[in-house]
Image 1: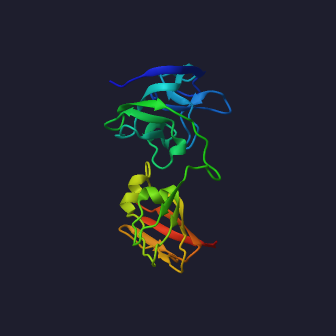
Image 2: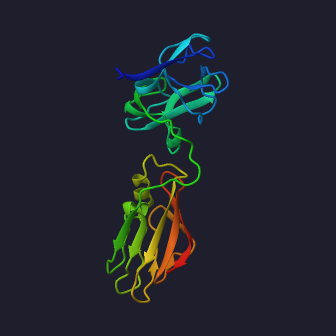
Image 3: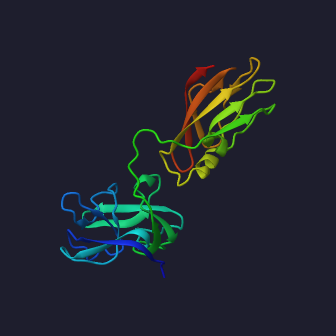
Length: 251
């Protein structure tokens, strides 16, 4: 039995027959002001249809609260969900939003077991489609181990590492691809982030970034004293990551 909790339901005229679309996502058409099925997986979702109106009848849509949602597959608790689009007559089922979380409209509270199963979702958003840069939280890591270091996924996702080689040249390692992917929420191919490593040595000691399991490194990986180098990491599959050297800054 799926959980429901109505906070805000609204009513609009159905712009098409929605008799087979109860507990699916719907959108508010900008031209007609009526509700309809989504025309793509990237449309802004009004909410979840609570009844099954014919064209011209009142459609009741939950836009805040907890609602049942018909799913396109088994989707686990905690997943962000968006609207599936198969075609004009088959659109609006919930799907795992994956890396396209900006299209998410809910979080699964009770899982679905298969296609057409009902999940319970807490409605969130909608979020604006991303453009430009987002402000993000960063963590600066200071590392001064007198030996080679394998950085953690949390350290490189933090965005900035201040590395003192502490007495000699170091061949530091990036984390494994598996560790990086595990640290990214709802990871998928195309996820990317930048980390900067600054060599804070007080002598002519270099840092050479070294590969690890599942990684491909591209470009110059050596960082000289008083230099910083930025690296772009891109998830390329469920098990692999490519890290590109973006260039050096001299301090």
